[in-house]
Amino acid sequence: MHPSSAAGPEKVSAFHICTGPIYVKNAEPGDVIEVHIEDMLPRPSRGPGHEGRYFGSNVAAWWGYHYGELLKEPKPRENVTIYEIFPDEGYAQALYSYHWAPQTDPYGVVHRTYDYPGVPVKTSDLEVHQSAIGHVRIPLRPHFGVVALAPREVDFIDSVPPAYFGGNLDNWRLGKGSSVFLPVSVHGGLLSIGDPHAAQGDGELSGTAIECSMTGRVRITLHKRDERLCDPTYPLIETPTEWVLTGFSHPDYLTEFGAKGQGEVYAKSSLDLAMKDAFRKARRFLMATHRLSEDEAVAVMSAAVDFGVTQVVDGNWGVHAIIRKAIFETERER
Image (tube, rainbow, N blue to C red):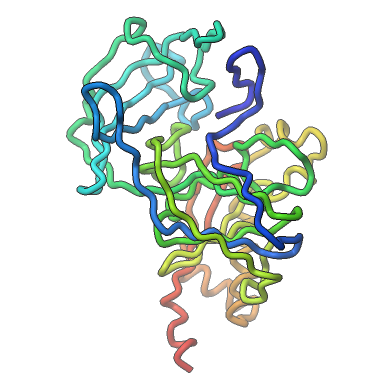
């Protein structure tokens, strides 16, 4: 899930568990691929004694925004919380938690921190606590954290930092009934999708959401140089009621930083840069899509557009701009 992860006999760069790459027939650079989430449901456990129940986990990890701000001992520490998910009722509830202790995987690699998903955990090495937040009901926001096309600059890429091609967007609005429009950079698009979350708050502060297994159904549509989108150069999310524009500290870090970009971006991210990128995209969107002047676009943004922190843990930090469709309803009625 993060740089310097290790598993088995080989070192790997960061990764997520995804389906893909999916080749989209006739997709060429300059086109746009729309990925619409038709449905997604958590997968039931098949573990003995837990059949038919749904579970997820959250790790307050070493790459989390909070990690250098811990108040109590032991410091540093990583805390894992296990949740039970109730999809029919629409919430998740914490069951228990534990501090991460070094674990040895089946290949003999010792994981002193949580650096690789799926490492078997020996409960005998841990002090498990009943969660003090077990009475808190976390509203479900099922979504895929990663929806990406292949970038034009490299063949193999760290899956953590998002950019113009999509990737690890980690925006909970990209769930059932929503779409994301992604610019095509290579022949066939090469779509990957995964990193399913049951719930997440804006910011994804601790480094992870409630991570869980999901079965999804998506519809993929190719738009040939779609003029309706006006500016198909970045991931654009559409929900039934909103447009969500994605801004990043470094929207094209692979070009900006060159060969060292996949490492350099982790050290150079800032919310100020991400906010500026989201602002510029929102301004262009309003001016191009709704034919507003620059002054009118700024006035609308200040009065009616919500800017929020998408995530501060994915190497390339994100700020999104939410434009509600309802504010332009009278425009459509003319």
